[in-house]
Image 1 (cartoon, rainbow, N blue to C red):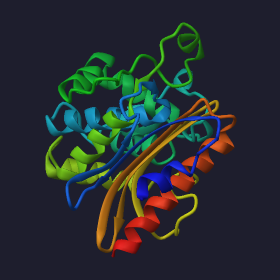
Image 2 (cartoon, rainbow, N blue to C red):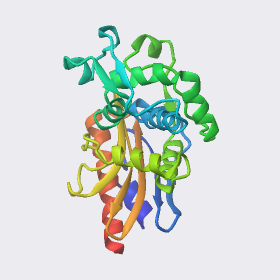
Image 3 (cartoon, helix red, strand yellow):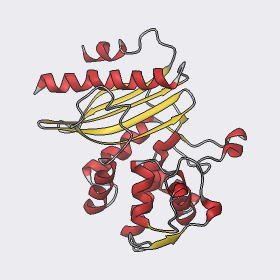
Length: 258
Protein backbone atom coordinates (compact mmCIF):
# COMPACT_ATOMS: atom_id res chain seq x y z
CA UNK A 1 0.00 0.00 0.00
CA UNK A 2 1.10 3.56 -0.71
CA UNK A 3 0.84 4.60 2.95
CA UNK A 4 3.13 1.77 4.03
CA UNK A 5 5.61 2.62 1.28
CA UNK A 6 5.63 6.25 2.42
CA UNK A 7 6.08 5.35 6.08
CA UNK A 8 9.01 3.11 5.18
CA UNK A 9 10.84 6.16 3.80
CA UNK A 10 11.56 7.35 7.33
CA UNK A 11 10.91 4.30 9.51
CA UNK A 12 13.35 4.27 12.42
CA UNK A 13 14.78 7.70 11.56
CA UNK A 14 15.04 10.41 14.19
CA UNK A 15 12.61 13.05 12.91
CA UNK A 16 8.99 14.16 13.11
CA UNK A 17 7.21 14.10 9.77
CA UNK A 18 3.92 15.66 8.66
CA UNK A 19 2.44 14.85 5.25
CA UNK A 20 -0.50 15.85 3.07
CA UNK A 21 -1.12 14.11 -0.26
CA UNK A 22 -4.08 14.90 -2.52
CA UNK A 23 -5.06 13.78 -5.99
CA UNK A 24 -6.20 17.08 -7.47
CA UNK A 25 -7.75 15.65 -10.63
CA UNK A 26 -9.91 13.24 -8.63
CA UNK A 27 -10.40 15.87 -5.87
CA UNK A 28 -9.66 13.34 -3.17
CA UNK A 29 -7.36 13.15 -0.17
CA UNK A 30 -4.93 10.25 -0.44
CA UNK A 31 -3.02 10.59 2.84
CA UNK A 32 -2.72 12.86 5.85
CA UNK A 33 -0.11 12.17 8.51
CA UNK A 34 0.02 14.45 11.57
CA UNK A 35 -1.13 17.22 9.23
CA UNK A 36 -2.44 19.58 11.94
CA UNK A 37 0.86 19.64 13.87
CA UNK A 38 1.92 23.27 14.32
CA UNK A 39 5.57 23.79 13.34
CA UNK A 40 7.92 26.69 12.63
CA UNK A 41 7.00 27.67 9.09
CA UNK A 42 10.46 28.68 7.88
CA UNK A 43 10.10 30.15 4.38
CA UNK A 44 6.82 28.40 3.53
CA UNK A 45 5.13 31.39 5.21
CA UNK A 46 6.08 33.30 2.06
CA UNK A 47 3.16 31.62 0.26
CA UNK A 48 0.79 33.47 2.61
CA UNK A 49 2.68 36.74 2.07
CA UNK A 50 2.43 36.30 -1.72
CA UNK A 51 -1.31 35.67 -1.52
CA UNK A 52 -1.87 38.85 0.50
CA UNK A 53 0.31 40.85 -1.90
CA UNK A 54 -1.64 39.62 -4.92
CA UNK A 55 -4.92 40.26 -3.12
CA UNK A 56 -3.90 43.88 -2.59
CA UNK A 57 -2.95 44.10 -6.28
CA UNK A 58 -6.31 42.62 -7.23
CA UNK A 59 -8.03 45.26 -5.09
CA UNK A 60 -5.93 48.06 -6.72
CA UNK A 61 -4.25 48.88 -3.42
CA UNK A 62 -0.92 47.96 -5.01
CA UNK A 63 0.39 47.67 -8.55
CA UNK A 64 2.68 44.90 -9.72
CA UNK A 65 4.74 47.50 -11.55
CA UNK A 66 5.00 49.90 -8.60
CA UNK A 67 8.66 50.57 -7.83
CA UNK A 68 10.01 50.26 -4.29
CA UNK A 69 13.24 51.85 -3.06
CA UNK A 70 15.20 49.54 -0.74
CA UNK A 71 17.40 51.22 1.84
CA UNK A 72 20.76 49.69 2.78
CA UNK A 73 19.46 49.20 6.33
CA UNK A 74 16.70 46.92 4.99
CA UNK A 75 19.10 44.44 3.39
CA UNK A 76 19.60 41.14 5.24
CA UNK A 77 21.43 37.86 4.72
CA UNK A 78 20.28 35.17 2.28
CA UNK A 79 19.28 37.80 -0.23
CA UNK A 80 20.45 38.45 -3.77
CA UNK A 81 19.15 41.99 -3.32
CA UNK A 82 21.79 42.49 -0.63
CA UNK A 83 24.48 41.51 -3.14
CA UNK A 84 23.35 43.72 -6.02
CA UNK A 85 23.95 47.41 -6.57
CA UNK A 86 20.30 48.02 -7.46
CA UNK A 87 18.13 50.26 -5.31
CA UNK A 88 14.65 49.88 -6.82
CA UNK A 89 12.51 46.83 -7.50
CA UNK A 90 8.92 46.42 -8.64
CA UNK A 91 6.35 44.67 -6.48
CA UNK A 92 6.36 41.90 -9.09
CA UNK A 93 10.15 41.56 -8.70
CA UNK A 94 9.89 41.39 -4.92
CA UNK A 95 7.20 38.69 -4.99
CA UNK A 96 9.14 36.67 -7.55
CA UNK A 97 12.45 36.89 -5.68
CA UNK A 98 10.72 36.05 -2.39
CA UNK A 99 9.38 32.82 -3.87
CA UNK A 100 11.86 31.48 -6.42
CA UNK A 101 15.05 32.09 -4.42
CA UNK A 102 13.40 32.74 -1.03
CA UNK A 103 14.97 36.21 -0.88
CA UNK A 104 14.72 37.52 2.69
CA UNK A 105 15.18 41.22 1.91
CA UNK A 106 12.34 41.06 -0.60
CA UNK A 107 10.20 39.29 2.00
CA UNK A 108 10.85 41.82 4.75
CA UNK A 109 10.16 44.77 2.47
CA UNK A 110 6.88 43.18 1.41
CA UNK A 111 5.90 42.59 5.05
CA UNK A 112 6.38 46.32 5.70
CA UNK A 113 4.34 47.27 2.64
CA UNK A 114 1.51 44.81 3.27
CA UNK A 115 1.38 45.00 7.07
CA UNK A 116 1.46 42.19 9.64
CA UNK A 117 -2.21 42.70 10.47
CA UNK A 118 -3.32 42.37 6.86
CA UNK A 119 -1.21 39.25 6.30
CA UNK A 120 -2.53 37.56 9.43
CA UNK A 121 -6.08 38.68 8.66
CA UNK A 122 -5.76 36.88 5.33
CA UNK A 123 -4.77 33.72 7.21
CA UNK A 124 -7.84 34.13 9.40
CA UNK A 125 -10.13 34.61 6.41
CA UNK A 126 -8.85 31.34 5.00
CA UNK A 127 -9.49 29.74 8.41
CA UNK A 128 -5.90 28.59 8.75
CA UNK A 129 -5.85 27.26 12.28
CA UNK A 130 -2.11 27.01 12.80
CA UNK A 131 -0.59 29.76 10.66
CA UNK A 132 0.69 33.14 11.84
CA UNK A 133 3.36 35.62 10.78
CA UNK A 134 5.01 36.82 13.99
CA UNK A 135 8.37 38.17 12.85
CA UNK A 136 10.46 39.15 9.86
CA UNK A 137 13.04 36.91 8.25
CA UNK A 138 16.44 36.78 9.95
CA UNK A 139 15.07 38.40 13.14
CA UNK A 140 16.90 36.09 15.51
CA UNK A 141 16.16 38.21 18.58
CA UNK A 142 12.41 37.82 17.97
CA UNK A 143 12.94 34.07 17.53
CA UNK A 144 14.82 33.90 20.84
CA UNK A 145 11.87 35.66 22.46
CA UNK A 146 9.59 32.94 21.16
CA UNK A 147 8.05 34.96 18.33
CA UNK A 148 8.22 32.30 15.66
CA UNK A 149 6.37 32.12 12.35
CA UNK A 150 4.08 29.11 12.48
CA UNK A 151 2.06 26.88 10.18
CA UNK A 152 0.85 23.35 9.53
CA UNK A 153 1.23 21.25 6.41
CA UNK A 154 -2.58 21.15 6.22
CA UNK A 155 -2.78 24.96 6.16
CA UNK A 156 -0.17 25.19 3.43
CA UNK A 157 -1.96 22.49 1.44
CA UNK A 158 -5.18 24.49 1.70
CA UNK A 159 -3.50 27.56 0.21
CA UNK A 160 -1.88 25.62 -2.60
CA UNK A 161 -5.10 23.81 -3.50
CA UNK A 162 -7.05 27.08 -3.40
CA UNK A 163 -4.56 28.63 -5.84
CA UNK A 164 -4.90 25.60 -8.12
CA UNK A 165 -8.69 25.82 -8.06
CA UNK A 166 -8.72 29.60 -8.52
CA UNK A 167 -10.87 30.25 -5.46
CA UNK A 168 -8.56 32.24 -3.22
CA UNK A 169 -7.97 35.15 -5.64
CA UNK A 170 -9.24 35.72 -9.15
CA UNK A 171 -8.09 33.24 -11.80
CA UNK A 172 -5.44 35.55 -13.26
CA UNK A 173 -3.82 36.17 -9.87
CA UNK A 174 -3.94 32.48 -8.94
CA UNK A 175 -2.28 31.60 -12.24
CA UNK A 176 0.38 34.26 -11.66
CA UNK A 177 1.12 32.80 -8.21
CA UNK A 178 1.36 29.26 -9.59
CA UNK A 179 3.60 30.34 -12.46
CA UNK A 180 5.97 32.00 -9.99
CA UNK A 181 5.97 28.86 -7.82
CA UNK A 182 6.82 26.78 -10.91
CA UNK A 183 10.02 28.82 -11.31
CA UNK A 184 11.32 27.68 -7.91
CA UNK A 185 15.12 27.37 -7.87
CA UNK A 186 15.45 25.25 -4.71
CA UNK A 187 15.08 21.74 -6.08
CA UNK A 188 16.84 19.57 -3.50
CA UNK A 189 13.75 18.46 -1.57
CA UNK A 190 10.56 17.35 -3.35
CA UNK A 191 12.47 17.16 -6.65
CA UNK A 192 15.58 15.58 -5.12
CA UNK A 193 15.14 12.10 -6.59
CA UNK A 194 12.78 12.65 -9.51
CA UNK A 195 13.24 13.76 -13.11
CA UNK A 196 14.41 17.33 -13.60
CA UNK A 197 11.81 18.09 -16.26
CA UNK A 198 8.78 17.37 -14.06
CA UNK A 199 6.83 20.61 -13.55
CA UNK A 200 6.27 21.38 -9.87
CA UNK A 201 4.84 24.58 -8.37
CA UNK A 202 6.37 24.52 -4.91
CA UNK A 203 7.90 26.39 -1.98
CA UNK A 204 10.43 25.07 0.50
CA UNK A 205 11.72 26.28 3.84
CA UNK A 206 14.53 25.39 6.21
CA UNK A 207 15.85 26.07 9.67
CA UNK A 208 18.27 24.05 11.78
CA UNK A 209 17.28 20.35 11.55
CA UNK A 210 14.02 21.39 9.90
CA UNK A 211 13.02 21.24 6.24
CA UNK A 212 9.65 21.68 4.54
CA UNK A 213 8.49 21.54 0.95
CA UNK A 214 5.00 21.67 -0.51
CA UNK A 215 4.03 21.62 -4.14
CA UNK A 216 1.70 20.71 -6.97
CA UNK A 217 3.06 18.13 -9.41
CA UNK A 218 1.88 18.39 -13.01
CA UNK A 219 2.24 15.02 -14.74
CA UNK A 220 0.86 14.29 -18.24
CA UNK A 221 -2.16 12.42 -16.85
CA UNK A 222 -2.14 13.30 -13.17
CA UNK A 223 -1.93 16.34 -10.92
CA UNK A 224 -1.25 15.89 -7.24
CA UNK A 225 -0.42 18.00 -4.20
CA UNK A 226 2.28 16.83 -1.81
CA UNK A 227 3.55 18.51 1.32
CA UNK A 228 6.23 16.97 3.53
CA UNK A 229 7.31 18.87 6.64
CA UNK A 230 10.18 17.46 8.71
CA UNK A 231 11.22 18.76 12.13
CA UNK A 232 13.56 17.63 14.90
CA UNK A 233 15.71 15.74 12.41
CA UNK A 234 19.24 14.64 13.22
CA UNK A 235 20.43 16.92 10.43
CA UNK A 236 19.15 18.93 7.48
CA UNK A 237 20.72 16.32 5.21
CA UNK A 238 18.47 13.66 6.76
CA UNK A 239 15.41 15.91 6.56
CA UNK A 240 16.00 16.57 2.85
CA UNK A 241 16.53 12.87 2.23
CA UNK A 242 13.21 12.01 3.88
CA UNK A 243 11.36 14.60 1.80
CA UNK A 244 13.06 13.39 -1.35
CA UNK A 245 12.29 9.71 -0.71
CA UNK A 246 8.65 10.39 0.14
CA UNK A 247 8.32 12.45 -3.03
CA UNK A 248 10.00 9.76 -5.13
CA UNK A 249 7.64 7.13 -3.72
CA UNK A 250 4.56 9.24 -4.46
CA UNK A 251 5.81 10.10 -7.95
CA UNK A 252 6.38 6.44 -8.80
CA UNK A 253 2.91 5.62 -7.48
CA UNK A 254 1.22 8.15 -9.76
CA UNK A 255 3.36 7.15 -12.73
CA UNK A 256 2.39 3.51 -12.24
CA UNK A 257 -1.29 4.48 -12.33
CA UNK A 258 -0.96 6.22 -15.69
